[in-house]
Length: 260
Length: 247
Image (cartoon, rainbow over all chains, first blue to last red; front, side):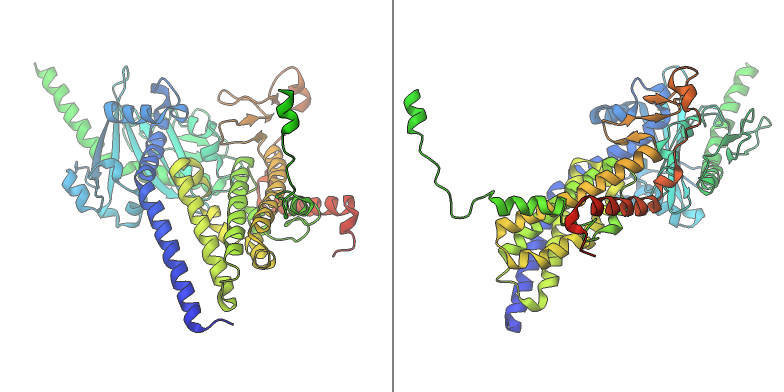
C-alpha cells in the first residue's frame, strides 16, 4: 500500500505532465485547425454555386477555395432590418474577426430574433450577374441542420443549395447531405410567387411536379424534410429586408433611366 | 562476395524474442479465440453507432488500435508506480489523454472526418475494451507484451467493426467507402449525379432483372448492427470449436 502523500504526489505529477503535453499540442496546431475549419465552411458555401465554378468545390485544392473566396466573393453582414453592418458592429456582436465569415450561425440561432445578424455572400459570376448565397440554420429530426442557398439576382430563383446536419439518421435524414440529388432538386425553384409575394420552397411528399415552390422529400425522412422546409421559409425571409432595399434602389435607377 | 555471406554472424537468440510464439499469440488471439466483440462482448456500444459506413469505421478502428496500444504501453511502464487505490483513475487519465491526441490530430490533418466522427472519437474513452485490457493485462505484464496485446485487441475490435460496416453500407446504401476519396458505388439506380456499377435503373443488361432491388433502409439503423453482430457471434461460435464450452 502506498501512503496518501505518495498518491497525491503521483496524481499531481501525472496530471501536470498530461496537461502540459496536451496544451503544447493544442496551441501548436490551433492555427492550422482554425484554417481547416474556415476552408471546410467555405467549401460548403461554394458548393451551393457549383454550376458557376470550373471544378466541383469537393475536389478543389484548399488554395483554390481560398482564392475564389478572396477574389470573387464579397461578404456582407446584415442585421434583422437589412442594414449592412460595419466590422466594428460585427465585433460588437461577439465575433473577433469582424468579417461576415466569422459569424457563427449556431450562436445566432440562440439569440433573440431581433438581435440576430446574418452573413450574405455575393458571388460575381461571369455571365449571370451577382449570385446571393444566404446561410440558414434550423432543426431536423434529432439535431440541428443547416445549409447555404444560392439565389439569382432576382432574389427568388434558386441556383444551388447545400445542406449539412449534426445527427440525422444515415441513409434517411442524412441524405439531405449525402445524396446530391436532394440539393440539386432545389435548382430552378423560386421563393417568390409570380405576384412578388414571399412563399418559400416547401418539401412535400410526392407532388412537386410543375410547382416552382415544392420539391420532393426523401422517403423515410419526413421530419427532416419538414425541418428543411421550415428552415428555408424562415431563414431566407430574414434576408428579405435587405433584398427589398436593393430591389427598390434598382427600381429607382430604372425609373431614372426611363425618365431620360 | 561469397566470403561475406559465409562470415555473416549468426544472430544469437535474445532472451525474450520480440516476436516469439507467445508474442504472436498476443496479436492473433484477440482476432479469433478471444475476440473483444464476439467472444467477450465488449465495446458493443460504439460498434452499433459507427458501423453504418465503412470509412468512419476504418478511422475509428485505427484510432482504437492506437489508443489501446499506447495506453497499454504507458500503463505497463508505470504499473509498479501506480498506487492501487487510484489505478482506475490513472488509467482513465492515460486513455483520455491519448483520445484527445487522436482528436487533435484529426482536427489538424483531416478536418472533414473529424467533423463526421467528433462525438464517437470522444467515446473511445468509455470503450470497455481499452480499460478492460489495462486492468486485465497491462497492470501485470511487461511493456512490450502489453503493447502487442493492445494492438491485438484493437485489431480484433476493428475487424468486426469493418465486417459489420461492410454489410451495412453495401445493403443499406449500395456504396462502399462513402465519404472517402475512393468511394465505390456498387448497386443502385444511376441518376445524372451518381453512377453505380450495378445499375438497377438501366433498360437493358442486369438493370431489367434488378429493377425490383431497393436499398434496405433497416440496414442504416443501429438495430441492424445488433443482429449482424448476433449472427457473427453465432457463426464464430459454430465455426470455432474452442468457443463452444464458453458461455
